[in-house]
Image 1 (spheres, rainbow, N blue to C red):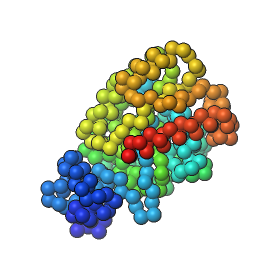
Image 2: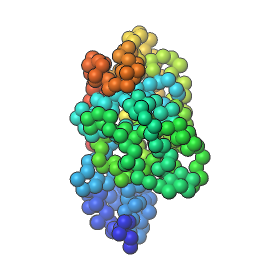
Image 3: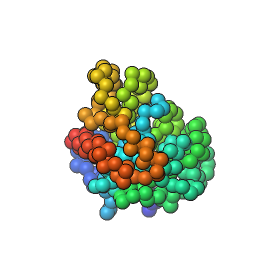
Image 4: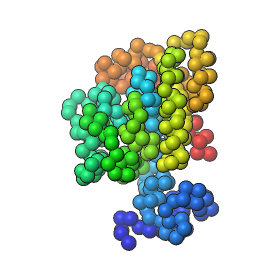
Length: 308
């Protein structure tokens, strides 16, 4: 038995996971987790199906911010939701978009490509910890580069879990991990959804923003059904809100697929100003920052409801 991949019986596995034995057995049978018939569970397998909190670590919540349509404000929501959460929690923002907009806002110097660390197409997998950068108090970023666009075709079955595998050694250091996803369907997005616990969908308050959410909803359902039963919908966030009266119809259209957050993100000039100055939003405009703090509160509330 490998010291790095111990094998547990059901009692030991439940103890490692911090679960009641009855709950553990129900879960293993429901998901047909490898080992449920033989009562021999590899630690590496448990990591794939459960959140294992390392000693001294925290219970992380991984949130994918996704909408396959461009221009809906995914990076803006990811950035400032992460900043708001970081006021009370340890947060990692993952720039998982080849456009690397979040990275460019904070990091002026050349950054290593995450592609060099994932182990894609037979390359050696390396720890991502050295390329994580601190951008604020309790606020770190895992940067991206255009090279991530090469993550298009799965060459091995494990290529769907490259991001999940990369996060395993460091996830218990953060209470919240926010993934800024690309505006497309494909292997990059599937990696994000396979490792995430929750998904949040930004939608601009305009009629044609409804285009594509049916396809995104179908992709989420496929991931939930086949590979990530943990993935839950937090809901859709109405973004760049300007108080249009016609929004009730838009919200009703969204509710056919996603629950809608009570908090809406107002359109503010301070958001592009903060981005142009490569600054945290809290240093530019406390009123707008308050809007994202309210969103962070509702995100935490919705996660607590999902867990209970």
